[in-house]
Structures are given as C-alpha cells and as structure tokens.
Length: 314
Image (cartoon, rainbow, N blue to C red; front, top):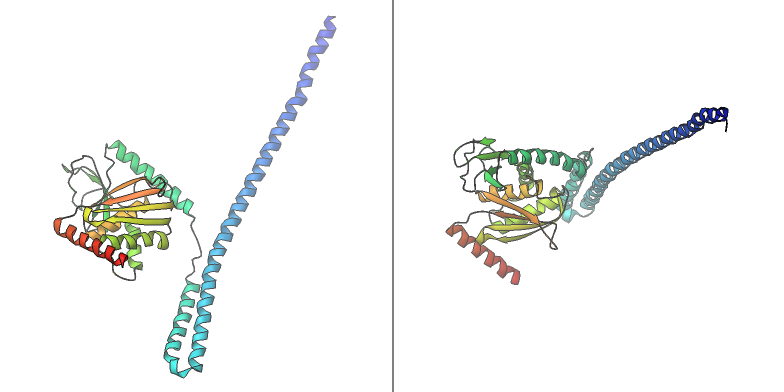
C-alpha cells in the first residue's frame, strides 16, 4: 500500500464520522422536542381535569340548589291548595327557597386539591421536626389547653417535665420545662369544627370521640374512615384512621392526630399525650390520645361506659 493511499484513507475518515454525529444530534433534538410536546400535553390535560373537577363540584351544589328550590315551590303551592296545612307548607316552602338561594350563591368557586395541602404541610413538618432534632427534644407530643388558644403543642426535652406556662414559647428555657411550645395544626380545624356543631361539645370521652371522628370524616374529609375505641376509666381513646388525605399520619403535628388531640385537650381541659402507630390489618393508622384521670372522674367515666354498654345491649 502506497503512502498516497494511506493519506487518502486518513483524510476521508473524518468525513465519514461527521454524518453519524449530525444524525445523533438530530435524533437527540427530536427526542427533546417530543418530550417537550408530551410535557405540554400533560400540563394541558392536568389543567383540563382540574377545571372539570371544579365544574363537577359546582354542578353538584347547583343541583342541590335546584332540588331545594323545587321543594320550596311545591310546598308553597301546596299551602295554597290545602288551607288546613297552609302554615306548615308555607314555612317548608320558605325554608326550601331560602336554602336554595344560600346553596347557589355560596357555591365555592375554587377547590384546593388535597395533594397541594399535603405538600405544604410536608415542608413545614420537615422543618419543625429538624429543629426539634437539633435541640435534642424527645418524641413526646403533649397537647395542652391554653388561655390564648384552644390548645398548644408542647415538645419536651426531658422525660420528667412540667407543663410550661401558657405565655412561654415558642422556645421554653425554664428549668424542668425546656422544649418547644407551638401553635398546634389542629387548633384552627377544631375551632372551625366547634363553630359548625349543632349542639354542645361533649365532655364525656366516648361521645366526644364520636363527634371528633364525624368531623374528621364528614366535615373536613381528612380521612375516609375513623373508628374510635374509648376507655374513659383508663384515660385513653384510640382512633383507627383509614385513607388519610394528608399522607402518613405519624409525622410532626399531622392535621389528623393534631385535630383529635386538640379536641380532647380542649373538651376535657387537661393535657393530652399523643401516640401514632401503623394500624396493621385493622386500619392504616392508630391514633391514641391519653390523659390523666382522677378518682372522681374515673368513676363517673366507668359508670358512663357501663350505662352505654347496657343501652347497646338493650
């Protein structure tokens, strides 16, 4: 082979690699364009689904308003046709029409997905939990009745602690009470729940647990299911939680356990310690609230439990 042949071969090799490089670049560009198109398509689809969800929720409210209005009109017409029942039918008609107006005009125009709230909570919980770890605080979570708020969350540093003064915090440095004293996530939820109650807030643990679980599932929709097991004589209430809307319930001051603990602390007017554990086959999570029971209240609670058991048996 001559030197000219070698030079010719060497000079041609770069030109044969150039088309391959250009093809790869074009392929990468096509892939990126395709991915960008898919992202844009998914973004548009998510936006469309959110709008459809809002419209579906609004249509449910408006259908309810139409139904109430129809009942009101029928009752009012019945009052004209049946003089003997006129007062009752007119009152029913007025109630139906008034309810229809309220339902129609108070229909929410915006809905926040549970995932959004969960992500906001996650960031806050992670930050506060990191601060508690940095301060060397314990895993104990104590919800304390407060004069300035319904209840506050106390995280102690020592296993032998005294409940700090209500005006302390957020960082408590008093001897015997060192730790954090924070506004509880469940405080605002409980205050809203209490405003929506049709009757009085119960002070009997078993009845109170039923009220709180109903609020958790029916009013706030924070869980799909909540079942209470109460031993008032022992100062314990365990609530089995299924399908939490805010993810794992064992995180720092999670809305579900926090709401329950704040409710027990406020209604029973005593500190409540909180424990959260996986529920196994029974449920997703078991939320246990404990409080001190004196002799008098313990006897009354046992009597109440026995009377409820007798009523159930009958």
